[in-house]
Image (tube, rainbow, N blue to C red; front, side):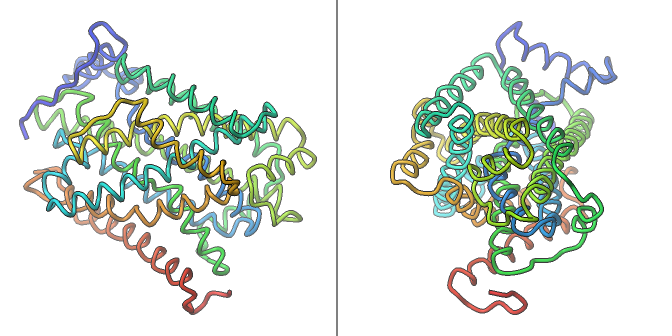
Length: 439
């Protein structure tokens, strides 16, 4: 484990200064809050995948139709996400390789091709949700056609991606700013919407799935929360960000990484919980049929006022633009990792947003498409989860940093939960009876 992992950043840039500050901390020459900030970034970028427009769609439906009943699913999904993002970051830090590269190097070629194909489908499903969400927000806020909102989202996203040329730090700061906007918006919403805090607390820890529709929504929540592309991306963000020279530095870097994952994904989890609570408080009592983002906006206006509706749209736009940016970054890294093939960002951007334009062009329901995309993601999710669990548990790959027995069992349990929900969902699709679930 003595390999030195280096990163290439423009000389004198903000990214270079961040690397220098991180090196001083690892060498014991600097400490304190500013020292910690030098390591903050990868988990913040990954966390935006857990606050994307797909979450808006599933969380609004969950809160409106089932009240607080599915809050436990949101919490469970977030805890699973924390664990697997930490494992992904660890893989990149310890091996200097990302998950897609590890799959390419260690799995048979047919498996690699199949995983790449599944990952590309997941990337398109991801971008469908993210791109449509931002477009819907812009369309509603500025009263322009949905296609115009999509065009603006595409241009802004591409503009943000151009900051990658200046190294990793500008992108981290931009995404971090958008995460702050989303979180602040939902703090405001919770003070506006009537919330039953006691009932919410009970349902956070009381597992229940009222009927088959709730099961489908639970699968969508898992798919919207634990994202395949984020599991792949986090290892790529950490693999060469901060150079390490020995295992002692690597261990210190892992400690900072784990702390960042907990903080960043705790914020993301609280935002998701707040989404369900807002939808439950605003809609569940008399508007249980609110299933679309557009309907939620128009219903919020008379219920809670134009201010609440505008804050909702602002958070949706920030979510759509930032998550679409991160989705394109992940798609590029996945393709390069699996195939050793890189395409220009503009081409990647055009290919992944094509399904969103098709959905709008054929007149499909945008919010329903968002929920379906999240179900697709949930079905694709076990592949990177299982691969990550295998690699991070192997001592010949991870050395002394291989998963402990407790970590292995927790990750195995999380993977099993996702698989079980997906099996139930498939049974439901084919109309097979599921004991204990009402039709």
